[in-house]
Image: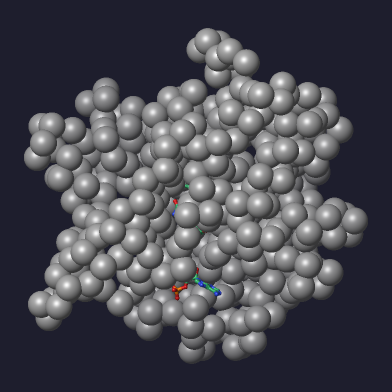
Length: 385
Ligand SMILES: NC(=O)C1=CN([C@@H]2O[C@H](COP(=O)(O)OP(=O)(O)OC[C@H]3O[C@@H](n4cnc5c(N)ncnc54)[C@H](OP(=O)(O)O)[C@@H]3O)[C@@H](O)[C@H]2O)C=CC1
Ligand SMILES: O=C(O)CCC(=O)C(=O)O
Protein backbone atom coordinates (compact mmCIF):
# COMPACT_ATOMS: atom_id res chain seq x y z
CA UNK A 1 0.00 0.00 0.00
CA UNK A 2 1.50 3.39 -0.90
CA UNK A 3 2.17 5.99 1.79
CA UNK A 4 -0.85 8.13 0.93
CA UNK A 5 -3.32 5.22 0.85
CA UNK A 6 -1.92 4.02 4.19
CA UNK A 7 -2.12 7.47 5.80
CA UNK A 8 -5.64 8.08 4.45
CA UNK A 9 -6.73 4.73 5.82
CA UNK A 10 -5.47 5.58 9.31
CA UNK A 11 -7.10 9.01 9.04
CA UNK A 12 -10.47 7.47 8.10
CA UNK A 13 -10.33 4.92 10.93
CA UNK A 14 -9.63 7.72 13.40
CA UNK A 15 -12.38 9.93 11.93
CA UNK A 16 -14.83 7.04 12.40
CA UNK A 17 -13.73 6.55 16.03
CA UNK A 18 -14.29 10.26 16.66
CA UNK A 19 -17.64 10.25 14.85
CA UNK A 20 -16.43 13.20 12.77
CA UNK A 21 -18.94 14.99 10.53
CA UNK A 22 -18.43 13.61 7.01
CA UNK A 23 -18.00 17.03 5.37
CA UNK A 24 -15.50 18.12 8.00
CA UNK A 25 -13.69 14.81 7.50
CA UNK A 26 -13.44 15.44 3.76
CA UNK A 27 -12.22 18.99 4.23
CA UNK A 28 -9.53 17.88 6.72
CA UNK A 29 -8.22 15.28 4.31
CA UNK A 30 -7.78 17.51 1.26
CA UNK A 31 -4.46 19.43 1.22
CA UNK A 32 -4.65 23.22 1.38
CA UNK A 33 -2.14 23.76 -1.46
CA UNK A 34 0.11 21.64 -3.69
CA UNK A 35 3.01 23.19 -5.57
CA UNK A 36 5.19 21.48 -8.17
CA UNK A 37 8.30 23.11 -9.55
CA UNK A 38 11.04 22.20 -12.01
CA UNK A 39 14.44 23.37 -10.79
CA UNK A 40 17.01 23.64 -13.54
CA UNK A 41 20.50 24.31 -12.27
CA UNK A 42 23.98 24.36 -13.81
CA UNK A 43 26.13 21.43 -12.61
CA UNK A 44 29.75 22.14 -11.65
CA UNK A 45 30.82 20.97 -15.14
CA UNK A 46 28.56 23.57 -16.79
CA UNK A 47 25.84 21.18 -18.05
CA UNK A 48 22.24 21.87 -17.10
CA UNK A 49 20.20 19.42 -15.06
CA UNK A 50 16.55 19.55 -14.03
CA UNK A 51 14.99 18.27 -10.81
CA UNK A 52 11.35 18.14 -9.80
CA UNK A 53 10.34 19.62 -6.45
CA UNK A 54 7.09 19.52 -4.48
CA UNK A 55 5.75 21.50 -1.54
CA UNK A 56 2.48 20.34 -0.10
CA UNK A 57 0.80 22.45 2.54
CA UNK A 58 -1.80 20.27 4.20
CA UNK A 59 -3.59 22.26 6.91
CA UNK A 60 -3.15 25.54 8.78
CA UNK A 61 -6.04 25.51 11.25
CA UNK A 62 -3.63 25.47 14.24
CA UNK A 63 -0.85 27.65 12.80
CA UNK A 64 1.79 28.02 10.06
CA UNK A 65 2.28 24.89 7.96
CA UNK A 66 5.50 23.27 9.12
CA UNK A 67 7.58 20.39 7.81
CA UNK A 68 10.94 19.40 6.39
CA UNK A 69 12.21 18.76 2.88
CA UNK A 70 12.95 15.23 1.73
CA UNK A 71 15.72 14.75 -0.85
CA UNK A 72 15.30 11.37 -2.50
CA UNK A 73 15.54 10.14 -6.11
CA UNK A 74 12.13 8.44 -5.84
CA UNK A 75 10.21 11.22 -4.11
CA UNK A 76 6.67 11.50 -5.53
CA UNK A 77 3.69 13.80 -4.87
CA UNK A 78 1.64 11.07 -3.14
CA UNK A 79 4.43 10.41 -0.67
CA UNK A 80 4.96 14.13 0.03
CA UNK A 81 1.19 14.49 0.43
CA UNK A 82 1.16 11.68 3.02
CA UNK A 83 4.13 13.19 4.86
CA UNK A 84 2.49 16.65 4.87
CA UNK A 85 -0.71 15.18 6.31
CA UNK A 86 1.30 13.31 8.97
CA UNK A 87 2.90 16.66 9.93
CA UNK A 88 -0.59 18.12 10.58
CA UNK A 89 -1.43 15.32 13.03
CA UNK A 90 2.10 15.30 14.50
CA UNK A 91 2.16 19.01 15.36
CA UNK A 92 -1.32 18.61 16.89
CA UNK A 93 -0.26 15.55 18.95
CA UNK A 94 2.77 17.52 20.16
CA UNK A 95 0.37 20.40 20.89
CA UNK A 96 2.55 23.02 19.21
CA UNK A 97 0.92 25.91 17.30
CA UNK A 98 1.59 24.70 13.78
CA UNK A 99 -0.15 23.04 10.87
CA UNK A 100 1.46 20.53 8.54
CA UNK A 101 3.46 20.63 5.30
CA UNK A 102 6.29 18.77 3.58
CA UNK A 103 8.63 19.29 0.66
CA UNK A 104 10.34 16.82 -1.61
CA UNK A 105 13.07 17.13 -4.24
CA UNK A 106 13.70 14.24 -6.63
CA UNK A 107 17.46 14.02 -6.42
CA UNK A 108 20.20 12.00 -4.79
CA UNK A 109 21.90 14.54 -2.49
CA UNK A 110 24.91 12.21 -2.10
CA UNK A 111 25.69 12.69 -5.80
CA UNK A 112 25.63 16.51 -5.66
CA UNK A 113 28.51 18.77 -4.71
CA UNK A 114 27.95 21.37 -1.98
CA UNK A 115 27.66 24.16 -4.53
CA UNK A 116 25.21 22.14 -6.68
CA UNK A 117 23.11 21.49 -3.57
CA UNK A 118 23.11 25.20 -2.77
CA UNK A 119 22.05 26.05 -6.33
CA UNK A 120 19.26 23.47 -6.12
CA UNK A 121 17.63 24.33 -2.82
CA UNK A 122 19.80 26.38 -0.65
CA UNK A 123 19.83 24.53 2.76
CA UNK A 124 18.49 25.94 6.01
CA UNK A 125 21.06 28.76 6.30
CA UNK A 126 20.79 29.42 2.55
CA UNK A 127 16.97 29.46 2.73
CA UNK A 128 17.25 32.05 5.52
CA UNK A 129 19.63 34.08 3.37
CA UNK A 130 17.41 33.89 0.27
CA UNK A 131 14.27 34.92 2.19
CA UNK A 132 16.13 37.70 4.01
CA UNK A 133 17.31 39.16 0.68
CA UNK A 134 13.71 40.04 -0.10
CA UNK A 135 12.15 40.62 3.33
CA UNK A 136 15.02 41.69 5.60
CA UNK A 137 16.85 39.44 8.05
CA UNK A 138 14.20 36.96 9.32
CA UNK A 139 15.68 34.02 11.24
CA UNK A 140 12.28 32.68 12.40
CA UNK A 141 11.14 31.73 8.87
CA UNK A 142 13.17 28.54 8.80
CA UNK A 143 14.31 26.08 11.48
CA UNK A 144 17.17 23.63 11.71
CA UNK A 145 19.60 26.51 11.11
CA UNK A 146 23.25 26.51 12.19
CA UNK A 147 23.62 27.75 15.79
CA UNK A 148 25.54 30.84 14.57
CA UNK A 149 22.49 31.93 12.56
CA UNK A 150 19.83 31.49 15.23
CA UNK A 151 19.58 27.70 15.34
CA UNK A 152 18.65 26.04 18.62
CA UNK A 153 21.00 24.13 20.85
CA UNK A 154 19.73 20.56 21.02
CA UNK A 155 17.96 20.56 17.59
CA UNK A 156 20.51 18.19 16.03
CA UNK A 157 19.85 15.51 18.68
CA UNK A 158 16.17 16.38 19.20
CA UNK A 159 14.44 13.67 17.16
CA UNK A 160 16.68 10.93 18.62
CA UNK A 161 16.27 12.38 22.13
CA UNK A 162 12.50 12.50 21.64
CA UNK A 163 12.63 8.83 20.60
CA UNK A 164 14.42 8.05 23.89
CA UNK A 165 11.90 10.05 25.97
CA UNK A 166 8.95 8.44 24.15
CA UNK A 167 10.39 4.95 24.72
CA UNK A 168 11.00 5.74 28.39
CA UNK A 169 7.41 6.99 28.77
CA UNK A 170 6.06 3.71 27.37
CA UNK A 171 8.41 1.52 29.41
CA UNK A 172 7.65 3.45 32.62
CA UNK A 173 3.96 2.93 31.91
CA UNK A 174 4.69 -0.82 31.79
CA UNK A 175 6.65 -0.61 35.08
CA UNK A 176 9.96 -1.12 33.21
CA UNK A 177 13.03 0.97 32.44
CA UNK A 178 15.39 1.33 29.51
CA UNK A 179 18.23 -0.37 31.39
CA UNK A 180 19.09 -3.74 29.85
CA UNK A 181 16.46 -3.53 27.07
CA UNK A 182 17.85 -4.86 23.77
CA UNK A 183 17.42 -2.50 20.80
CA UNK A 184 17.78 -2.95 17.04
CA UNK A 185 18.03 0.24 14.97
CA UNK A 186 17.57 0.48 11.20
CA UNK A 187 19.30 3.63 9.92
CA UNK A 188 22.29 5.35 11.46
CA UNK A 189 21.87 8.91 10.19
CA UNK A 190 20.79 11.89 12.26
CA UNK A 191 17.91 10.16 14.05
CA UNK A 192 19.27 6.61 14.33
CA UNK A 193 22.75 7.58 15.55
CA UNK A 194 21.45 10.04 18.17
CA UNK A 195 18.85 7.54 19.37
CA UNK A 196 21.56 4.86 19.62
CA UNK A 197 23.93 7.14 21.54
CA UNK A 198 21.29 8.33 24.01
CA UNK A 199 19.87 4.82 24.55
CA UNK A 200 23.41 3.54 25.15
CA UNK A 201 24.04 6.34 27.69
CA UNK A 202 20.72 5.54 29.42
CA UNK A 203 21.75 1.88 29.93
CA UNK A 204 19.99 0.25 26.95
CA UNK A 205 21.82 -2.34 24.85
CA UNK A 206 21.94 -1.64 21.11
CA UNK A 207 22.45 -5.15 19.70
CA UNK A 208 22.18 -4.49 15.94
CA UNK A 209 22.36 -1.50 13.62
CA UNK A 210 22.20 -0.96 9.85
CA UNK A 211 22.65 1.75 7.26
CA UNK A 212 22.99 1.75 3.49
CA UNK A 213 26.56 0.34 3.75
CA UNK A 214 25.58 -2.79 5.71
CA UNK A 215 24.42 -4.19 9.03
CA UNK A 216 26.21 -5.28 12.21
CA UNK A 217 25.29 -7.19 15.35
CA UNK A 218 26.65 -7.97 18.82
CA UNK A 219 24.23 -9.65 21.19
CA UNK A 220 26.17 -8.29 24.19
CA UNK A 221 25.60 -4.70 23.03
CA UNK A 222 27.53 -2.57 20.52
CA UNK A 223 29.95 0.07 21.82
CA UNK A 224 28.05 3.02 20.28
CA UNK A 225 30.67 5.79 20.86
CA UNK A 226 33.26 3.63 19.01
CA UNK A 227 30.74 2.91 16.24
CA UNK A 228 30.03 6.64 15.81
CA UNK A 229 33.78 7.24 15.46
CA UNK A 230 33.99 4.44 12.88
CA UNK A 231 31.04 5.86 10.90
CA UNK A 232 32.64 9.34 10.82
CA UNK A 233 35.86 7.85 9.43
CA UNK A 234 34.40 5.23 7.05
CA UNK A 235 31.05 6.81 6.08
CA UNK A 236 29.05 3.77 7.20
CA UNK A 237 28.70 0.99 9.78
CA UNK A 238 30.28 -1.57 7.43
CA UNK A 239 33.64 -2.89 8.57
CA UNK A 240 33.19 -1.97 12.26
CA UNK A 241 35.52 -4.34 14.09
CA UNK A 242 33.53 -4.35 17.36
CA UNK A 243 30.59 -6.37 15.95
CA UNK A 244 29.74 -9.08 13.40
CA UNK A 245 28.46 -8.30 9.92
CA UNK A 246 24.94 -9.58 9.22
CA UNK A 247 22.68 -9.61 6.17
CA UNK A 248 21.14 -6.07 5.96
CA UNK A 249 17.78 -7.53 4.90
CA UNK A 250 17.54 -9.35 8.27
CA UNK A 251 17.86 -6.22 10.45
CA UNK A 252 14.14 -5.79 11.12
CA UNK A 253 13.66 -9.41 12.19
CA UNK A 254 16.71 -9.62 14.48
CA UNK A 255 16.05 -10.80 18.03
CA UNK A 256 15.50 -7.81 20.36
CA UNK A 257 13.03 -6.24 22.79
CA UNK A 258 12.60 -2.93 20.95
CA UNK A 259 12.90 -2.27 17.21
CA UNK A 260 13.54 1.28 16.00
CA UNK A 261 13.08 1.83 12.26
CA UNK A 262 14.95 5.12 11.64
CA UNK A 263 15.56 5.09 7.89
CA UNK A 264 12.72 4.83 5.38
CA UNK A 265 8.94 4.57 5.01
CA UNK A 266 7.08 1.33 4.33
CA UNK A 267 9.84 -1.01 5.55
CA UNK A 268 7.58 -3.02 7.89
CA UNK A 269 4.99 -4.73 5.71
CA UNK A 270 3.16 -8.01 5.27
CA UNK A 271 6.38 -9.52 3.86
CA UNK A 272 8.24 -9.32 7.17
CA UNK A 273 5.72 -8.48 9.93
CA UNK A 274 5.19 -12.11 10.93
CA UNK A 275 8.93 -12.58 11.47
CA UNK A 276 9.45 -9.53 13.69
CA UNK A 277 10.64 -10.61 17.15
CA UNK A 278 10.54 -7.26 18.95
CA UNK A 279 7.77 -6.74 21.51
CA UNK A 280 7.82 -2.98 20.95
CA UNK A 281 8.36 -0.93 17.78
CA UNK A 282 9.26 2.74 18.14
CA UNK A 283 8.66 4.52 14.83
CA UNK A 284 11.51 7.01 14.50
CA UNK A 285 11.07 7.12 10.71
CA UNK A 286 7.90 8.50 9.12
CA UNK A 287 5.29 5.86 8.18
CA UNK A 288 7.65 2.87 8.48
CA UNK A 289 4.73 0.47 9.08
CA UNK A 290 2.16 -0.47 6.48
CA UNK A 291 -1.45 -0.92 7.75
CA UNK A 292 -1.36 -4.62 6.76
CA UNK A 293 1.68 -5.04 9.00
CA UNK A 294 -0.12 -3.10 11.75
CA UNK A 295 -2.85 -5.76 11.74
CA UNK A 296 -0.40 -8.66 11.80
CA UNK A 297 1.66 -7.08 14.59
CA UNK A 298 -1.40 -6.25 16.64
CA UNK A 299 -2.46 -9.93 16.54
CA UNK A 300 1.06 -10.87 17.72
CA UNK A 301 0.69 -8.42 20.65
CA UNK A 302 3.46 -6.10 19.44
CA UNK A 303 3.09 -2.55 20.78
CA UNK A 304 3.81 0.25 18.30
CA UNK A 305 4.68 3.79 19.34
CA UNK A 306 3.49 5.61 16.21
CA UNK A 307 5.60 8.06 14.18
CA UNK A 308 3.34 11.08 14.77
CA UNK A 309 4.15 10.78 18.47
CA UNK A 310 7.50 8.94 18.60
CA UNK A 311 9.45 11.20 16.22
CA UNK A 312 7.79 14.48 17.22
CA UNK A 313 10.91 15.59 19.15
CA UNK A 314 12.39 17.12 15.98
CA UNK A 315 9.53 19.43 15.11
CA UNK A 316 9.00 20.24 18.80
CA UNK A 317 12.54 21.58 19.12
CA UNK A 318 12.08 23.35 15.77
CA UNK A 319 9.17 25.08 17.48
CA UNK A 320 11.50 25.98 20.38
CA UNK A 321 13.93 27.41 17.80
CA UNK A 322 11.15 29.58 16.34
CA UNK A 323 10.15 30.72 19.85
CA UNK A 324 13.77 31.65 20.65
CA UNK A 325 14.05 33.60 17.36
CA UNK A 326 10.85 35.50 18.11
CA UNK A 327 11.94 36.14 21.72
CA UNK A 328 15.43 37.10 20.57
CA UNK A 329 16.69 35.03 23.48
CA UNK A 330 18.72 31.84 23.23
CA UNK A 331 17.93 29.00 25.62
CA UNK A 332 20.55 26.80 27.25
CA UNK A 333 20.64 23.22 25.98
CA UNK A 334 19.46 21.90 29.38
CA UNK A 335 16.31 24.00 29.05
CA UNK A 336 15.67 22.76 25.49
CA UNK A 337 16.03 19.12 26.59
CA UNK A 338 13.94 19.58 29.74
CA UNK A 339 11.12 21.28 27.80
CA UNK A 340 11.26 18.54 25.16
CA UNK A 341 10.90 15.90 27.88
CA UNK A 342 7.81 17.69 29.25
CA UNK A 343 6.20 17.83 25.80
CA UNK A 344 6.88 14.15 25.07
CA UNK A 345 5.63 13.01 28.50
CA UNK A 346 2.48 15.10 28.12
CA UNK A 347 1.99 13.77 24.57
CA UNK A 348 2.19 10.20 25.86
CA UNK A 349 -0.41 10.92 28.58
CA UNK A 350 -2.73 12.56 26.03
CA UNK A 351 -2.38 9.67 23.55
CA UNK A 352 -3.07 7.11 26.31
CA UNK A 353 -6.16 9.04 27.34
CA UNK A 354 -7.52 8.81 23.77
CA UNK A 355 -6.71 5.05 23.74
CA UNK A 356 -8.86 4.70 26.86
CA UNK A 357 -11.70 6.84 25.52
CA UNK A 358 -11.86 5.08 22.15
CA UNK A 359 -10.64 1.63 23.23
CA UNK A 360 -7.94 1.67 20.58
CA UNK A 361 -4.22 1.09 20.05
CA UNK A 362 -1.54 3.78 20.33
CA UNK A 363 -1.60 4.61 16.59
CA UNK A 364 -5.34 5.29 16.69
CA UNK A 365 -4.86 7.05 20.05
CA UNK A 366 -2.38 9.43 18.39
CA UNK A 367 -4.47 9.88 15.23
CA UNK A 368 -7.68 10.60 17.17
CA UNK A 369 -5.78 13.05 19.40
CA UNK A 370 -4.31 14.91 16.42
CA UNK A 371 -7.52 14.90 14.36
CA UNK A 372 -9.65 16.01 17.26
CA UNK A 373 -7.39 19.00 18.00
CA UNK A 374 -7.29 20.06 14.33
CA UNK A 375 -11.05 19.53 13.91
CA UNK A 376 -11.75 21.67 17.01
CA UNK A 377 -9.51 24.48 15.73
CA UNK A 378 -11.16 24.29 12.28
CA UNK A 379 -14.66 24.57 13.73
CA UNK A 380 -13.65 27.36 16.15
CA UNK A 381 -12.27 29.36 13.21
CA UNK A 382 -15.67 29.40 11.58
CA UNK A 383 -15.88 26.35 9.36
CA UNK A 384 -19.32 25.72 7.93
CA UNK A 385 -20.63 22.50 6.40
N1 LIG B 1 15.84 14.41 11.11
C1 LIG B 1 14.69 14.68 11.74
O1 LIG B 1 14.62 15.61 12.56
C2 LIG B 1 13.50 13.82 11.55
C3 LIG B 1 13.54 12.69 10.77
N2 LIG B 1 12.45 11.89 10.67
C4 LIG B 1 12.47 10.67 9.88
O2 LIG B 1 13.48 9.79 10.36
C5 LIG B 1 14.01 9.02 9.28
C6 LIG B 1 15.51 9.20 9.25
O3 LIG B 1 15.81 10.58 9.09
P1 LIG B 1 17.28 11.15 9.27
O4 LIG B 1 18.01 10.38 10.30
O5 LIG B 1 17.12 12.61 9.43
O6 LIG B 1 17.90 10.86 7.84
P2 LIG B 1 19.42 10.61 7.46
O7 LIG B 1 19.50 10.76 5.98
O8 LIG B 1 20.32 11.39 8.33
O9 LIG B 1 19.62 9.07 7.84
C7 LIG B 1 18.96 8.03 7.19
C8 LIG B 1 19.70 6.75 7.56
O10 LIG B 1 19.03 5.64 6.96
C9 LIG B 1 19.99 4.89 6.25
N3 LIG B 1 19.37 4.15 5.17
C10 LIG B 1 18.91 4.58 3.98
N4 LIG B 1 18.41 3.56 3.28
C11 LIG B 1 18.55 2.46 4.06
C12 LIG B 1 18.23 1.09 3.91
N5 LIG B 1 17.67 0.65 2.80
N6 LIG B 1 18.55 0.24 4.92
C13 LIG B 1 19.14 0.68 6.05
N7 LIG B 1 19.47 1.96 6.24
C14 LIG B 1 19.18 2.83 5.27
C15 LIG B 1 21.00 5.89 5.76
O11 LIG B 1 22.22 5.25 5.42
P3 LIG B 1 23.40 6.10 4.71
O12 LIG B 1 23.73 7.23 5.63
O13 LIG B 1 24.51 5.13 4.63
O14 LIG B 1 22.82 6.55 3.40
C16 LIG B 1 21.13 6.72 7.04
O15 LIG B 1 21.92 6.03 7.99
C17 LIG B 1 13.27 9.50 8.01
O16 LIG B 1 12.14 8.69 7.82
C18 LIG B 1 12.82 10.90 8.41
O17 LIG B 1 11.67 11.31 7.69
C19 LIG B 1 11.29 12.16 11.35
C20 LIG B 1 11.19 13.26 12.14
C21 LIG B 1 12.24 14.23 12.24
O1 LIG C 1 11.86 20.30 12.19
C1 LIG C 1 10.98 20.31 11.35
O2 LIG C 1 10.16 21.21 11.24
C2 LIG C 1 10.86 19.15 10.39
C3 LIG C 1 10.18 17.98 11.03
C4 LIG C 1 9.76 16.98 10.04
O3 LIG C 1 9.83 17.19 8.84
C5 LIG C 1 9.20 15.71 10.53
O4 LIG C 1 8.91 15.62 11.72
O5 LIG C 1 9.03 14.79 9.72
